[in-house]
Length: 258
Ligand code: GLP
Image 1 (tube, helix red, strand yellow):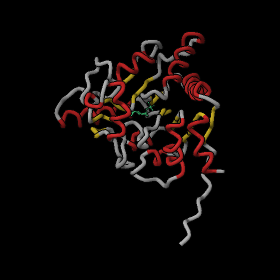
Image 2 (tube, rainbow, N blue to C red):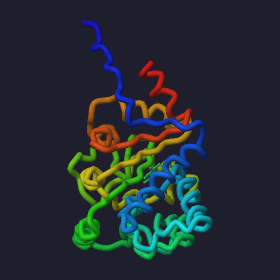
Image 3 (cartoon, helix red, strand yellow):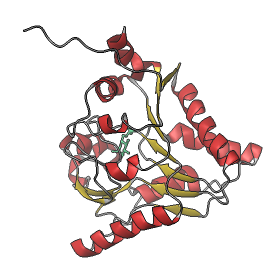
């Protein structure tokens, strides 16, 4: 039997910048534009190395152009578990050190990674969801993508209707985090993460990826049928999703489309 012919990928929501600086400029411009048009915007933010340049561009625009975050509310996707909010490995500290210490945004939230009972975690996850809803829902969710195709810490197997919860990290994800933890043995095995359903509720999603190391998973995310095996494939189904890449991250996707 001949293989099913590949349908052309819809690339209308994909934009490719020449390099990482250009990519971060594109994404920072979109966020700045939203904050200017809707001063009480609700942002969903991501960690990892990918959005770092976006955060420094926003800090620069705050300092040089007075971009105002005073009425903005931010919710981060995830936190390692167990993790003290004071630890330098925590995503809370990551966000403080890379963004919130340098802009005027008093309202920002990161899931709590402190060790506690399963029922307390469950309760706190429900409260995180309720807090997002009370803020009016997320206007723009920024996402990176992990090598497993995870978004936030929604590893393969995550259901499209999953909500904020305690999750188990994939080995690949722990290996990727090992250098910053000084070895894999120090990397937590779990995390608290917004679910795919939580992410899909955002009114707009901007997924970004940089570098050749992400080219294969970017192609899979944007060409494979939605599947729990590659959580990012669900994101592509969002009615207002934008994929922003640099040339190296886009290389295999563009090849697939050629
Ligand atoms: C972590 C984060 C994700 C992020 C991913 C990729 O797993 N929880 O939100 O997208 O890392 O990280 P990087 O941007 O460093 O490649």
